[in-house]
Amino acid sequence: MTAIHQIFPAADAGPLSTEALERLYAYPDDGRLRVCVNFVSSADGALEVEGRSAGLSTPPDRVVLGLGTDLADVVLVAAGTAVAEGFTGVRPGERMAQRRHRFGLSEVPSTAVVTGSGRSLPPTAPVLTDVLVPTIVLTCAAVPEDVRVGWSDAGAEVVLTGDGTVDLAAALAELDRRGLRRINCMGGPGLFGSLAEAGLVDELRLTLAPFLVSGEAGRIARGAGMDPARLSLVSVVTGDDTLLIRYEVAEPPAR
Image (cartoon, rainbow, N blue to C red; front, side, top):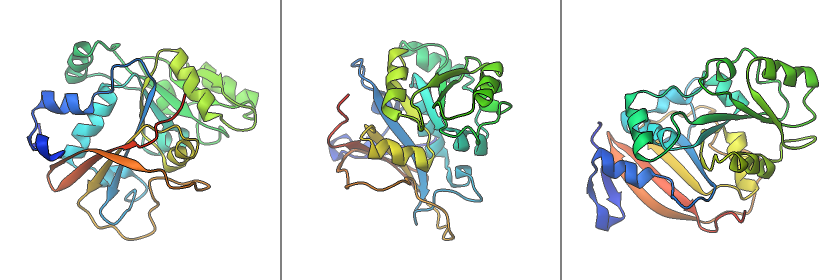
């Protein structure tokens, strides 16, 4: 594993073993739904390189990103991000299988895709077709029925969570009802912004990558705007000139 050191809290500073890093990034085992949002950003705030986040990722980022999925019940992602980044369903390797067994989790985390229009999610998208367990599409009644039928025909479970738009609180409640309470949100910025504005985010896991990008790249959250939500620093680890930061929302969502 890439050498990773903890630098905050100071009392816990030092090199981290794989097991210690797992414990640090494990979801609380309290039976409560928890939404953790993952993003990587360049040092000057860019979200992507040539339209994708992969150009910013470093080995420590990939280690932590893998932990988020390995220890989750479900990966939550916006349809546009899933298609642009080439998402498929999760396919566990030996590491994930062993890790999930140790933590008492199901063999494979589910994938849930959010779309309010349906336009960015073709029925041939790998996130629907290249899967081990059916993808859950969280959408709304405004999406044409033939589009929804196309997703169902592709093998997805289509769940209506609103009329004109996706009701994100209702969408999370649907995941909760299925026992999918450890939620690893992979973006994109619109979904993160909407979750944050609705007060539905518990934790931000932000990788600050050692690159300068400039240009017109967007930011990690996008939306109508909100009163600043106070965050509480939980941990900072580092490796390969990368900072991996965990923040909790100081006032957790009331569900």
